[in-house]
Amino acid sequence: MASVSAISEADRLAQFRAFDATKAGVKGLVDAGVTEIPPIFYTPPEIVLDSKSSDRDKKFTFPVIDLQGAATDPAKRKEIVEKVRDASSTWGFFQVLNHGVPLNVMEEMKAGIKRFYEQDLEEKMKFFSHDLTRKIAYSSNYDLVFPQVATWKDTTVFNMAPDPPKHEELPAANREIIQEYSKEMVKMGDLIFELLSEALGLDPNYLRKKDCLRGHYIVCHYYPRCPQPDRTLGTGKHTDSDFMTILLQDHVGGLQVLHQDHWVDVTPLPGSLVINIGDLLQLCA
Image (cartoon, rainbow, N blue to C red; front, side, top):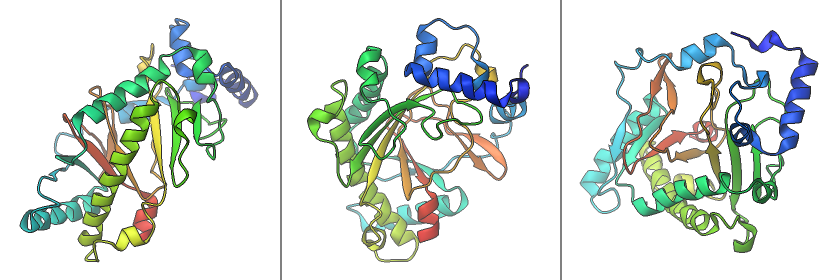
């Protein structure tokens, strides 16, 4: 198996620049019918094997919290706050059900993301940029222009607050659902921040007053089928440098979290969302 060091630094940068210049992303490689991934995507074998180990997470149960009654039943809310406190302090993650976001909105959001990435390249290229200060930026490996190892995903970032893009500025493939989903995430975020504030023993409005809801991005990843999945990853090990991430998985799954030095699969549940306590919230709290 080839390793990251199998190509020189100069060749790696040249290959990444050539790949980036196509503006087609990994979807373009799949459409071109590649049967072997380019060397810039090779991930060290020990990292791939570590993340894909399937026998170490069996003793862990990823926390799932039912939010039914959180806004209407004081006794139920108290129980929920205790569960949020425990999951946040021990995992930094939890999965929520009965959160109030309509299922049809969640399903249309996933469909809208797929429509964007599977439309003609010329339409996607209109939004291509590595500048994350733009209101809409589509690229592959958006986090670093020339990362040490490229990952098998394409990404579009929508800067939805405090100064959202106009309706006509959004991609035609998903502009309606992006706006609707954004509104639902603001309501959802407001509730979770209330619960987290109470879990900290503070006033429900504490985190809201800290402007945790002032801005938000919608980050849409697309992971097309990889011809060599044992040589690369869709997303590498990282933390989220925000207050909180609300994550919507599709039925394929693939999300893992690091817990007690073990990678634990987060199995997608129908109608669920995953809450990730971000770096900024940990500092703020």
